[in-house]
Every structure is written in structure tokens, then in C-alpha cells.
Length: 219
Image (tube, helix red, strand yellow):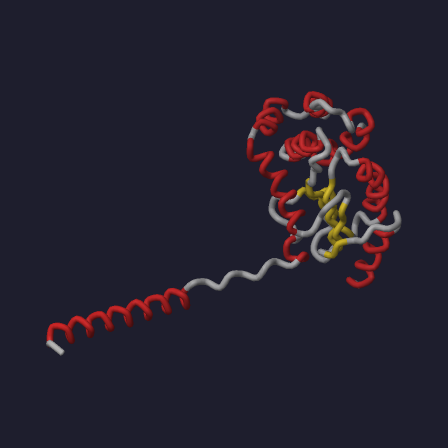
């Protein structure tokens, strides 16, 4: 074999070896993908979580994925309010937006609630939307102006409210909850999680039973 050929083959072998080493180093240096978060991890309170009641560290956390236009959510509203009152100092109650595509105004309502939340009026708008649901639920045209009138009645700063409703970030905030709900297996509303565990609803008492069980487990 000619010397020039030997030199070429050696150089080629060295180059291939260097490439293999570089690839191995890159693979080892690449961060290991985090495992998919568990249900409990995904429901940890975030900085922007919409909290109706905060009982502090160690409290049982109840998370509700809701649709303000959903009749079942409207039916559960008094059940939820009684639960919040009964266990006010022992549970942290969080709502997550989950407007269903079949409801014309569910997303408008969620955006109105989020816009109100940005001014510290979440609970007031939450109450107003559920208390008036029979007036606007199932409407086939937008009721955004009606929701705006609720904001006026609640004495919100209307320029700030209008800006929030028009801001794409508000709709994105609603969609974030929807996307996370889908990832967690939410398919309908209301869907409740108690300390990260989904509640199987077969009777009206199932939610409270789950809360009581979690409270006993925390003792």
C-alpha cells in the first residue's frame, strides 16, 4: 500500500473516531428529559392560580375545572359554596378554567372572570356568572357585553377591564388551564381534584366525602 494511501486511511479513521467521541460526549451532556409530572405535581398552586380560599400551608387543596356556562357546574355551585363555608379554614379552593367547545359563551365568561381576577374581583365575578347563568347560558350569540355590564356593576376599572379582555394574554391564560386539564384527563365539567387526586362523581356527596377523607389523612 502506498504511503499516501496509508496516511489517508489513518486520517479518515482518526476523523471517524473523533466524530464518535464527540457524539458520545454530546449524548452524555444532554440533560435527561424530566419524567411526565404526576397529577399532584401538575396541580401544585402556581403563582397565577386563581384561589378563592387560601387556608395556608398544610391545608387540603381542592381544584375545580369549571365551565361557567355548564349546567352541571351551575348545579354544583351551591354545593361548592356550602363546602367552602363549612371547611373555610381547612381547605384551599382553586378554580381552573375549562370552557367547553359546545358552549358559545363559556370562553367569554372565563375571559371576563380572568379580567376581573386581575383587578382582585374574581370571587365577585365568579358568583355573578353562576347566579345569572340561566339568563345567558345556552345563548347562541355573544354575551360579552352582558359580562362587561357585570364588571361595571362590580365597580371595576372599565378601561383596565376592557384592555384585559382584549389582551391575547388573557385568552392564553384561559387556554393554559384548558391544556393542562386535557393533559390531566379532564373531559367534562365540573371535574374536581382533592390533593391532586381526581374525584369520581357519582353522588352529590362525593366531593365532600373526598375532602373529609383528605382532612382525616392530614391529621
